[in-house]
Image (cartoon, rainbow, N blue to C red; front, side):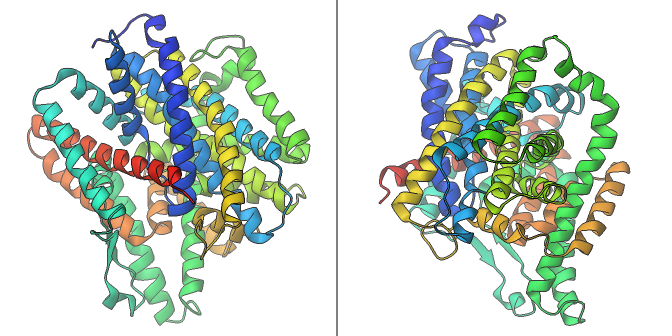
Length: 534
């Protein structure tokens, strides 16, 4: 294989056809796994391997054509995630709620279009200027390069991928390996400590590095060793539920405050450079001013006249997406985690303070934000891979648009098929959709507003001091067992980083294979479950 210099060699008809077919499969499986398992592993490595395999079988391919194809393939996954993590909450609150396919499709299409345009506008800032790691993007590029070069790197990558895939099958399909280990003795003292038995989480921690994972783990320690156990024991909180509500609101506040810090320190000073093309007929990543304008105005029409959101609510939601896609870019680039439903909650709460909206429309606002932020995080990983491989961003923008639109149409259809097949969503059902349940509990407001505002102020201040406050908030918000495993990977990165550069690079290749193995196996298991559903 080689690196193509000509745009026509990168954005080919066959790359788009393969991307569309892959997007159909990945979107379908992603909707199922998001509803059933409450998690959505990044499909980036899986689609990189699949694109490379198919295009190499056809012959005369190149690294950039592969990158373009897997950009289209993966885009639909996070569109599905954005819907699955929000919309089912409507039926959890009101089982007989009247929700039409066209309303949800309009939300999905709007999120895909907004995610596309805002991602294209911030790509240069976060990928080139900030040089954020985007661990899944690095892993995808390592996968493609290793497949091209062969040798020791290829053996490391594909052997680790195979071993981790086997591990994942034994854990998730046969149930021979537990998904997590928890210290039950500590639970009695309200200390919720444990490990997520996930090679992928260790690999993510390795690629992210010790700084971000250390701050992440610090947030987890603050939550699960101080706020909850000490807070309850000393009478600060009535019970564990009250302490959990406090720490969740504090974590969300930290993430929001950091997001506002990103806006004031990282985005607004460069607003002319980043967002100026919206108002000028100049090309930016393949989007001229006219197409950028249409990609923002069309969602206003769809959200207002199809989904029934008041015009003011639609405009405020789009303004919120402008902010939260930058936040999603920052946190995904630092951690490999994209809490898209949290961003949906943030904008929903902001809009409801200004505009009176109904329950269903509130979920639609959360959904359009989650879809846009999910797409932003996913495609920026692909952009990171493309930056390393030298792919023309214009090819990737087109692929993103195609995959995102296919994902919107497919994910809305699959959501309604599953609702009709199972009849319900929520805790205790076959499709628990835990993120959507969390959104449903937040529709009435934040559990602890005081904690949220304290977190907001601290997050803003930390970002201004160049301390990753969003990562700290993520550690406070997420379960302890996830943070522990990711931190272990960060410690491994610290150890390997002190050795020679070659050892560090081999560790990155190994981590990429581990990411790919669990990602490939997870997606295949989800596909099998979709095909055998019922």
